[in-house]
Amino acid sequence: MRARKFHELSQDELRAQEREMAEQLWRLRFQAATGQGEGLRKLRVLKKDVARIKTLLRQRELAAQRT
Image 1 (cartoon, one colour):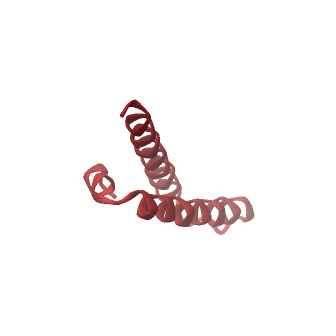
Image 2 (image 1 turned 90 degrees about the horizontal axis):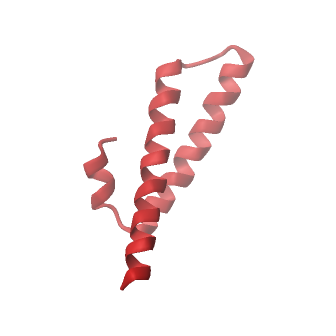
């Protein structure tokens, strides 16, 4: 997902996306460990998306503290 799409989501939607992606990450890691991997590329993209969400949530948290 593009970073712009994440900026359009609300706090609750971001947290839901983060939970969903964390579950997907766990499944992909499990599949990779058992040799049923879907592909390394999807795993990398998912990890980056989770990092983007966490960064955006933290930025919003800090902005709220300043005001």
